[in-house]
Image (cartoon, rainbow, N blue to C red; front, side, top):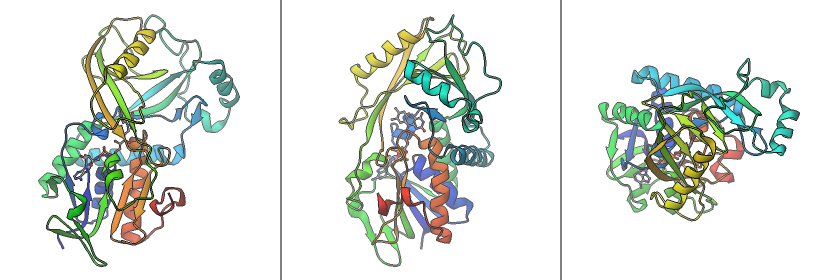
Length: 348
Ligand SMILES: Cc1cc2nc3c(=O)[nH]c(=O)nc-3n(C[C@H](O)[C@H](O)[C@H](O)COP(=O)(O)OP(=O)(O)OC[C@H]3O[C@@H](n4cnc5c(N)ncnc54)[C@H](O)[C@@H]3O)c2cc1C
């Protein structure tokens, strides 16, 4: 056998699974097209512990946050560089309903745990932002996903475990004992293809609801804000030369990676409403988020082809959810530890 596992796709799903299996001593080969634009490479990489109009705590946030922090820290120590940047996240409350919900929740210990202490007052500098008075600041982080994936790719290449290429579904052959992909054999094959897995014939029962998203980059030398700020849309300081990213949009019927004038207008108008300082747009990117189970991951082994795995559906939470579920998937493959019912590909 050439490997224990072949992984197709090196986005957040494939890369986190490759690391989890590597740490368990399994031999992994990764095949990826190495495209410039993918969902993971375009992503802002923000971890959002409290989100939505209901001002809700993220799903299983107390488990996922420490898992993500420890996972990326371990990769950083092997890769010799920092990619996961802890940063406070300021969420401004735009409507009466959001403010009412927050008044009801904010005393609860599980919300208090997520807040930075003490909360700044005022939350935002009104010389920089047009903003409502009420908001909250939570402990958060962002992953420089593009840089992290590039470093992970170099790590795999140096060990001869990276193959650049396209794998058509017809090139996959499966038996009870092994898988064969483009001349390579392994004990398992795991498909981590992002939204394009909807096109392959192996998991036809999954109900895909993938969404295109677009992001702008801009320069604003007078914007002296170092936290992630959410004023309806989010603004992320990259820490480089007054450069920020802002977004994003959701479109459910366009699966191209082409930036559109309509999305640019939406995001730019939002930025004009939020900022009191001048800015210049410097970039515009688009990609498709793979969504199956409302941004909850979907993973596991095929019910018939027990050598074929699937890890996908990370939606808009890839950075936060991928490390936890990649670790679970590795435990399934190496020790037969069962997966959580709600994310198992056989039950979605
Ligand atoms: C605009 C936007 C903003 C986002 N912001 C955030 C954010 O702030 N925080 C967050 O957590 N998430 C964010 N996301 C979501 C996040 O990007 C996804 O959850 C994540 O990228 C999904 O990763 P993946 O590995 O499943 O898919 P992908 O990143 O799409 O990776 C799939 C890989 O498989 C390869 N591939 C596919 N088919 C084949 C084949 N047949 N042969 C070889 N290779 C193949 C592709 O080339 C690609 O490299 C954002 C997404 C978008 C679009």
